[in-house]
Image (tube, rainbow, N blue to C red; front, top):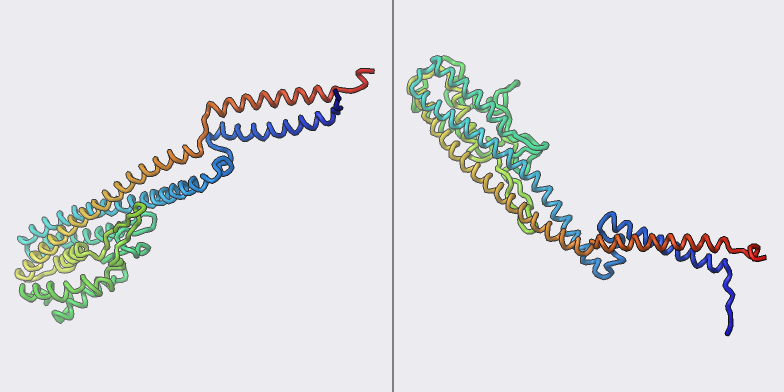
Length: 352
């Protein structure tokens, strides 16, 4: 039988190493106890950590789309509200134009209708320039610029200058001339259907009224789905509404002949009716977009829930097991500290 001598220094070194190891383990399980997740995912999962990273990437992509969809939803809601207001205004003015057919040219009722149309035209521009966070909802892909210029402004707007120029070019005198009373119903019809109407479409509309793009905005609303998410301010419904309101606000209060005034009112009624129908279709289109975004959002939520479950399954820890490990390691650490203290007390002096 042989005896090996073990010094107190050796024993102390062994215990210090043990204490260090226990402290490291305790730090790890304490972190897992407080977070409910693995402290070192890569070390614990090993080769499976690649799959976990892929799950996190999918979740980040879904979170990004969800954030984008929230902005799109806000923009569509704003567009829907603006279209509702425009449709209400169109319906009101349509009734007013019908009543205006029985009015007297240059009379107080006609002047009142002209002022009402002017006010509605100003409101039209404001509604068309609705925006969310600096993005104009009717601007198409050119959402950074107000799509519609105000008609009545100082200095005179390009749109009003174009209307006045077209009138004078057609009749040979300005709208302020007393000669307006000589305009016949046939002449007024021809002017409104040709020279005047041409100002509200194509390049003329873009030059004097609109800064909107014909191309509507699109957004990716789900991992594999991209849809149109706006209505361009260059749509026929908007052009017709501007056209009907402008003709009455410009010419409705003039001392026209009975035939010219009647033609003005009937044309305004017809054009506004087209605008109203177009606005209804626009509202339906926006509603369909809202529904698509909502459905995509619901699908994203389900996918996020599935990914969350998978990630938690990979990274989560058993709270009971971790708590037990914390207690056991704490006990071991206290024992190691106690032994270390006892060893430090060992000295030959105590035995002499």
